[in-house]
Length: 319
View 1 (cartoon, rainbow, N blue to C red):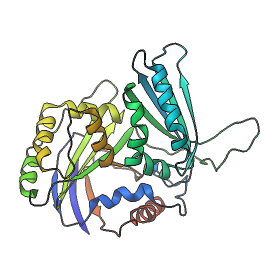
View 2 (view 1 turned 90 degrees about the vertical axis):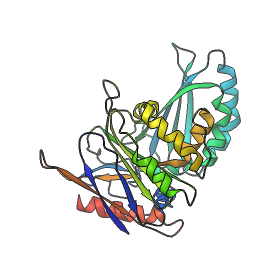
View 3 (view 1 turned 180 degrees about the vertical axis):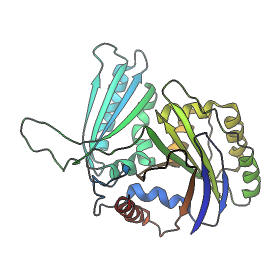
View 4 (view 1 turned 120 degrees about the vertical axis):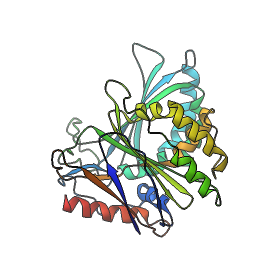
């Protein structure tokens, strides 16, 4: 286990930190664990938790190509039973806008966040939704915990959260991928040239921080965003300095990718995704400089989720 200090500021920074942890990717397994005792839903200081046991409602907004509405509906008919068979899936509903025929809404309900995150970041998910890709111009996904539900007096499945989580307008996300063994030195050189992207995205979204870590041949990139995460990620991807480094990295990656091919890029970034599953914070002193410490735990295959739940319960208790 290695503790790596990272200085935190309100401006975006890029830090390359070498560690001796064996496998940073095990953290991603947190979303695939079997259910155990949930984190207390009303734990103080917890602003993000995939482990509180509450049901999850996913809202996917889709912009369908003009004239392809029937093709899109036919593609959905072909995949709907496959999605319904995913463990943890409860139901879904497909809607078409009354005002604009190209705008569609797909809502789905899940028993909890863990099974949804395990599926949405898997190759199975990519293969399942592939028939929809040619019909869709753009998508935007929103994910919510169900706090209350009124349904004509009938009991709703599962237990709703007893209290809302309290936190600021900050979203956290990370990506992880590997380079071929033997190319670590050249990869580190390229990463050292990484230029921090412009922090301003638009009137409602701002990139607060980017951090870059390297552990052996594994790279982890973490971002913090105030506002909309997907808008911020697209903003970062368009930065010339970022694109130059990403293109230079391509020959060294263990998993091939073509950022000019939407399907190849989507598959790469889905596999690389490390969504935040828990965040607990204590009050900061106004004006105080914050020091960030990263803890990397090498764990047995398949045990990442259980460790994440244990750490989440400890954080919730201490918050």
